[in-house]
Length: 333
Image (tube, rainbow, N blue to C red):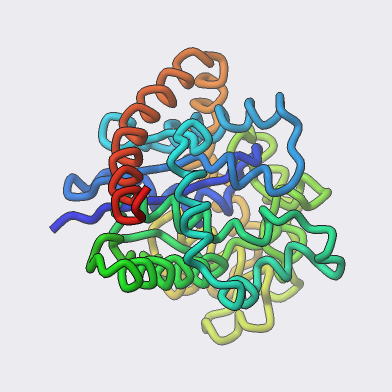
């Protein structure tokens, strides 16, 4: 039996290799499985939990769609839309915030990390956005949600909200309780400058990441300058525990070549990093550069991107509005 899959990506612009290997590559596989029904949402309502420049946000929404398409997600097989266009998301978030409990949200570690020491100055949206995330998922009767380690806790909250609503209003299975889809063997993609930090667009140095819009020369230069250590390539996976930069580069290579890290280690054991980096650059150019070319091409055709979003909105709105009407009936509105 096929899965109903929901996933959202924030339109922060400048998506990078970490976003591709951590999420988008997996979306393409899910999209290509004929048994799956996939909804890929550009979660622009989530983006405004921190202040956004309106023009930049509009451009970033289009760039996220362009990245989806350039990576191989087929809009004929999946629904691609931006969240703010479907009013049901905001409405369901309010309704579910009356079901969710403060104690549940207080346990969310991501808020503590993002708000930092002065959480009194953080927006209410940043605090309560896991409830909006639950609304996103539950409106589409999603059976499965691809999640990384940082979102597992939010999906647990979504499951709690669904079960509480179903129990409180005596509507068994009204909200489908979604299961996590966790990618196997995926190493977290770290900064090219520091193997202990996650690859991020917010890091000041552009050399810390491979952007999905980088050209061949930029890719080669960034891989060449990526931090390593003076030792040759290890032969045993245990030796990587104290060598974060080597582990990161080997993980990237293994992921792009669809092989496990042990196989990559046996291939390069004892060799120097220069040879490995040359091969890693070639693999990145082979896999990422075509995406870069296609993103740039698509960004020159904003009408086409807007059409994809418009068609996706119509399909998403139909499903979500139908669910909201049923929620109204249950609540007595």
